[in-house]
Length: 469
RNA sequence: GGCCCGUUCGUCUAUCGGUUAGGACACCAGGUUUUCAACCUGGGAAGAGGGGUUCGACUCCCCUACGGGCUGCCA
Image (cartoon, rainbow, N blue to C red; front, side):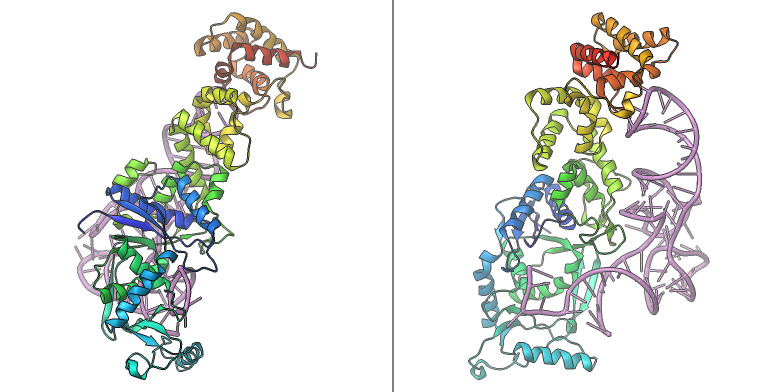
């Protein structure tokens, strides 16, 4: 293949962008970006009854969230209908296509008898070789003249050479009786006109490739490289449906998975680069190759997604994380962070991001900075607060007035007080945690003190120590 | 029905004729520890079944089973 690489993602706007489509887009994006090529977007909206602007927007939003930026404006396939018709008529004029006047009923009858006689049900039009002067004045479709013998070999980068006998190919319709193009024509023409060099798509299109190749051959166009990737299946191994993980990508965004983690997981699902599991976009782009894509369908595994997401959150810069968190809040209809909260959160981020797999988890761990006094301890935390521990907290408060506010000093002060009561630091951490956060699972107590500062720490300890007395 | 594709631990996968079949997630046990997360150590866990080819098959060929796709004037 010479010249720059051009890939495309071509979804139908008939619903949300599901996870399988997202992965197809990702593979196209990775391949294009890794080869300094272009990644185009085409909306296959020729089915006017099922296509909606909302679905188109959902697809655009989903791609944007995932960070799969496309080059140039999205192409509307519907708007290119005149060009598709032009190609059909060109083929007609060249004698490579013909007008077929068979009615739907005739075709149906043909298929029924063919099936009854255990013959091929592929329709064989009686109009293929009828000269134009014998054509009736009736509605017609334009059919391509499929090759009568031989075979078609799809040189697929993922599936290998797939051979299909040409008698499996019928004279498919190019232009409907209302003059609109069918999908197969539209795809071939658009891919050619857009200069697509690599067609990377779901393997549900593998057989279709042979049909589209007929059009390329009839037009004398050079073929693109094909790569048909296996679909994603549900946890039960069945085709993905709404029942399992076939959620729109917006759902994953709402569940709080970071886009980088999604990209990493999706890329790893069905594609591999040795033992590498956790990688950056730059690495994925550099490593990605069509031949390394697996040939069998993969199942979606939330556990592994979470694991990867956790590692990506931990590896993301604080500022970027805060920004993403803001988008997550907006997306889920939650109030945005005020300046004070954002400030505290960015101070706390270092001890938060290593313990969260998702944004909701991150927010949950951040409860200690988001809450305002007086804290109401949860039941599980309240049990740590008794007369003895309150006494220790009061004592600690005294020392904290003058302590240097550093990790080492705070640790020393807390340890010293615990020891003076014949306890270990760990035993003081419980009540301290209850006082500082009002709950039992939090970042390290020392980190919490460092983040909220001396005044707030002392105030919270005083609150807790005075309760119930 | 016809045609096409697929099948390695529970899951994602490595292996491209010779390995004690490796890694990751998950799980179990132990350790570290200030709760959670993380981390460290160890453990169980796989070539769908049957025939070939070969000195030797997860790997190549055939059959079967199972799963998926296409077979439209849907995309």
